[in-house]
Each structure stands twice: as structure tokens, then as C-alpha cells.
Length: 110
Length: 114
Image 1 (cartoon, rainbow over the protein chains, first blue to last red):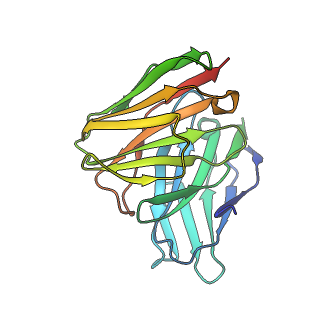
Image 2 (cartoon, rainbow over the protein chains, first blue to last red):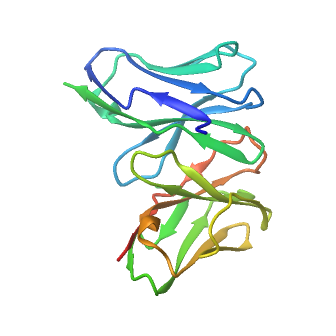
């Protein structure tokens, strides 16, 4: 059973637009929810992370919205730029176990 | 420049070969991880080491054998692999295992099994 479900699989956004990627999780024991950004030929890099005691976290153009009751969290990229074109992964963890989504390929069109 | 270095970057091997992947972290972290990344699939956590001790083995076949001689180095020894083992193998490190710790990933080893 997939612990973290991510959508959409791919996303195309105009420059300056808002990119939104959604994730849903199963296990209410998860206590750490990071988002990673991966460029071709590179490993994933931590973008932003949230704990379930807050509903929103913002870092620059990136915002995580967290809905504990719905077991959902999402990444919003404001003013999307061509340089944001990459694959984005959400994850959920408890203890030593990390579960990742299947990734979203984001393309920002100039 | 990444604080986690993986070598080699690419590896092609036959099913009967024996090879090893190497990971080194320069971040002073105490936990290290091996992940498998296949196309269209979530990253799969394979092994976790905390202070050189293996703390997680997620039902990984015995043809994959990890080794962690110290907190800075992690190896993945490969033998008698199958074609479905072709994937990108990622190493990561964190301050300590136990969740709530950001993981820093290397750029991976692209493994192809002939």
C-alpha cells in the first residue's frame, strides 16, 4: 500500500503563475513532511518541510499548506520561474521510516 | 557542491559480477541511508545506519549488502543482481536518524544490469 500519494504526475505552468502539487498520506503517526526538488542528473534537495502542529509554512516563493484532519498537504510555488522546472517529491516520515510520493514533473514555460 | 559524494556516477555490470557503490558525507552527520529510485516509482528506502549501526533493513534482497565502517562512509556491495535492479541508487545523510531531520542526498549512482 502506497503510504504517500502525490498528484499531479506532471504540471505545466506559465512563468509568473502558481504551481500547486498535492500529497495525501495514510499514517496519522507521521510527524515530518518534507518537500524535495530534483533536477536531472542530481539528487533530491530539501526545499521546505513542515511538522503537523502548524497549518502553513512559507519560505520565499514556496509555501506548504497542511491539513491534518484531511491528511493532506500541498506545495505552492508562487511566481513560478523557468528555473523552477524540476521534479518535486513530497515525503512523510516517522522515526527511521521515510515514504516518498511518486514525484511531479514541473515545467514552467517562459 | 553537494556535501554527499557518491561514486561511481554510472555503473554497468553483468548479472554475475560483484561491484560496490561508495558514499561519503562531509557534513558531520551521524545517520546515513541508501535509497533506490526507479522511474515512475516512489523512492524506496533500503537501509538506515545510525552511528555506524544498521537500524533499518526494509526487506532488501540479500544480493544487496551494506557496510558502514564509520559515520562518514557507506558502501553498498552488489552481487548476482537482476535486471530489475537497474535504477538510480541514492545515498543520503542526516544529523541523526529518528525523523524530523532533513536528509541531504548525493547525486546517485546510475546502475544498469545487463
